Length: 323
Image 1 (tube, helix red, strand yellow):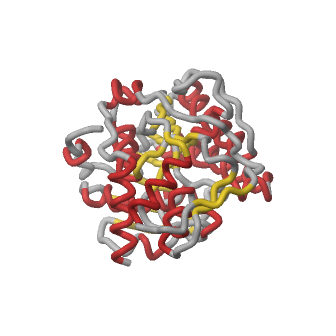
Image 2 (cartoon, rainbow, N blue to C red):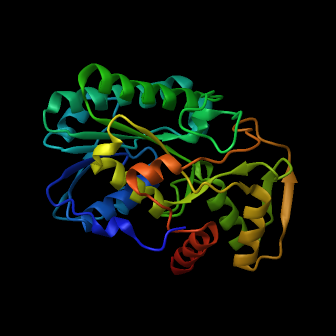
């Protein structure tokens, strides 16, 4: 892991940044970071997953209530923006319940953002938040950006379609786009609902409630966990680096972690004695192993994760204790 905080050097005082989904977990942390770096910030959110109170108020912050599915709302919010960070998205559980809605938000919504960015005449970069779910069951580990994609859920299909539209707008219209495929991002404010929580939030909640940590399957499945502040740093770098134009990057730790190890670490850090309860595996995201190769983003953007898994968990638990 890195030994410095490179994002501190960034100054966005000349930028107007639109963050779609800015009331979400990642979006709200990103908005706070942008404001600290002197940016003018706009947020477009329909509050289906985002929380308005996360954003507070600021002289350089303007919040729009609306959906990326509404082209007029997107066009209004994007006016005058120099950078667009497109994080508005569904959740994998939503995609299974209503794949049509998932397609509307993740595909049509992304096209609306790209069309408005192209039309604006001011947007210099669109950063698209994607997911390592697009890889499905990988053939090789760690997973490289040019490895085969094999989406296995409606969510993964729609996120990949959004990636392809970003690429098409770059090639066909010269709109500068960058795609970030995030691993399992953890940390930051609690999700609006427990259903939309990742495994880290679920485990921490169960441990602090003195309940056993529930694992689907045998717990030997692996994931790549990245702390939210590192994910935000990657977004900031991708938004301003000339090397990022037209590129796709994995954003993870590059470290393969079993769910059993994650659970045991959280039990240790919380002091919980309730242990682990194993139940049948889930019907979604049944990927046995997943770890990302992050050499490309290290090389191009000089991005290095600053937090180990344990350091990130300790910070999460500190935030929990202060709430």
